[in-house]
Length: 561
Image (cartoon, rainbow, N blue to C red; front, top):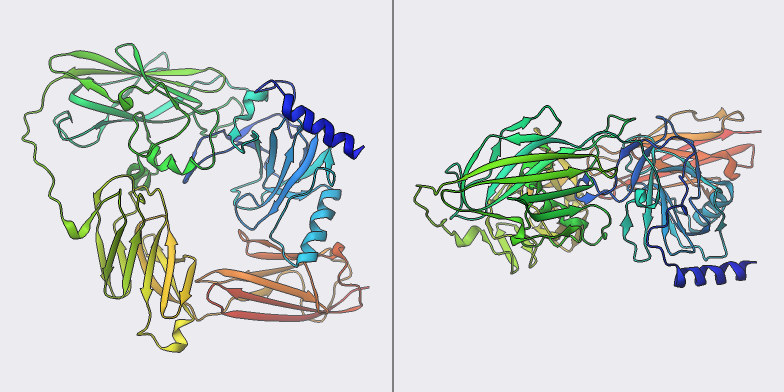
């Protein structure tokens, strides 16, 4: 039977014809589909790769296989997707189920056996096609809130055989939606120093005017030269108030199509360009994601189509024209924006910007900045554009511009710590400083001799920080010497106030036990069903280590019948 499954799987993979089968995948939940997040909507540093399906504000809903296949990947991690399951189907597609509470009994046993064998909670497994075969409608997991989830829900994806996520609604999953997209902001952008908007050479916000029919317009704009536009907006479905992403954006100039962004499918390798697609400075300052309806250098998103003149329009003197934008959701509801434009040259004298060699970054080459004991290395094409960078060092604090410039690659910050005492060096790390009080946040730091280095993908303020305080450990549902026969689990709270938790190890009577780490609540949980504590008298030992090596050991004795 297993050999027949593999044969059918291979045959169907090779000869499947339909790119988006409509009746192949069922909903992964037996509840009405209500979305808290839509496909490809704009998230921090990435496009959302699936649908976030609401689970009635609770965990534990049954999650079913969307179609026949086999479990091809299982990943359990503290962050990201948390507990995630991947099912490969005979037609070549892969469905993904993430932020799970737990897996179905057979899959849960498979995972736990591997976790105990490798003595690790975080694990990534790739079962063969014969190990965990799945039929349509099989229970595969229970919905949860694990990983970086902001609340109970099921993250559901469909990927093609090149691991590219595709909008699951293209496969027939249905969500009630009779609402048109909403536009919240409009901006106009001169392309260069020979262009202007209302005599300004800089980005300009336009006043948005809602119309009674649900569309929008703006006040007439006086402009000249090559001009681009940007919009911010959202879509809502019938059964939820969540502000979700838009499915399609088109732009027209005097009736001719100039630009389209179609959010149907993308690859994970390109998702980093989201910060080039949006106005990154506005996002950092106002938390508003303005989508640019023009294409700048480095924006190679595959979702772009029918782009003329990089999406810019050319406004000539003494002309009257109109720029229109159409926003659509997946169900075809749409909203229109009209921007009347009058062509008029600027009277301002144009001057070239001053170049300061010591602080000027050239995007097409590597750049190295050094001062006192700090060195910063930017590889070639770390940035999309050349720009003047604010670089300053004072008392082991590095000011590296503001975090308003989008980066294409990570770069390296290196501190020379030779002047520190030997007993301090092991406790130092590089931190980014954030918020009003400039609180330090640990960046993964490596030490080679007297050099500390860290890689990051954000500009901002950084500092060399010392952590000499060990993590804290506090039992939550038991105490030393207690009888625990009626408990189903052990629960412990762990915390570290500065560099953060790096790892932990727990044993009962010298045998390693699986403790699930929930970082949002700073808890570790052991399930007595694992069967490690078989004796009446049990000795628990837990060692927790932070990111610079400080550790704390907690020991307790408990009794069970």
